[in-house]
Length: 326
Ligand code: NDP
Image (cartoon, rainbow, N blue to C red; front, side, top):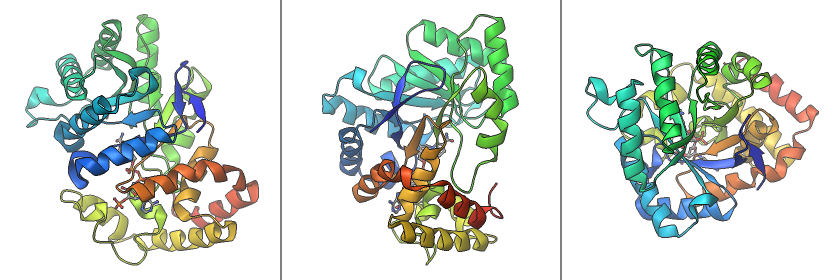
């Protein structure tokens, strides 16, 4: 494993990390979740990603139990939670980024994780109904109380982040230091263009999500949808439609061409997709998702092939995908 600094902070995060969306408390049983977390940790992964909204809080409960049983030192790993979508019924103050919900959601996540601090606490989406200053002050206060170590955002635009950073700087508050955007071969605009000025100054860590576009970049949907796939998980019909429904043919065709590139390099398609993300030095960590130990073991080897993605290989990937990226 290699470790990268999380943007402008001194925190070292493993270049590959592991997240709980769809899987923990939902798609997979708890014993599989335990095996997956151990597989990741044993490979040097030190960051585990979670959110209040994953399986309505159950993902944090499952992860918290596993971490407690593991006996691993708290200083050896980093955990995150995210606030916005809520873990309860969705009453007006059980979602969003108001001071009330940010603080109550943090306290609830600490209980679920059975810990006294969350290392990275993300605003899971921007909340147009709450002034940025209110959220920023709530995050700052949680940091001062020692409940949160660093705060960040997920899927915020460059402009929204810049406003938050300027507000915090002006009022001497802890700034957001990390953003969690989607980033993969097919989805690049936000990461490569919109956030680029902030990477330059003042600096920003990134924990990128869906490096394999929810499995699309593994080629697993090129011949129909496997039965045990996330696309058959209840509630994810929208994702199934997006990845395999109307308009999906050009991307599926590009995946077939990427498979040929992977074959030429003698690497698997999942490793190629993850290594492509790792090539970008503005990526602090690639959050892996996996519902099976074999998938995770395979994906954890992506670091070994990063050097094989020469400029010529990267150019080939560009040619194949340029008409289908967003
Ligand atoms: P991926 O894009 O890597 O998708 C993971 C899924 O792809 C797996 O569950 C599996 O699907 C399939 N897969 C992975 N590896 C393989 C392989 N080697 N062979 C075959 N299939 C494979 O990542 P996620 O979408 O899960 O995102 C990673 C993490 O990012 C999440 O767990 C979460 O922590 C975070 N995230 C954050 C978001 C945010 O808004 N901030 C949004 C989404 C994710 P299957 O189960 O069908 O086999």
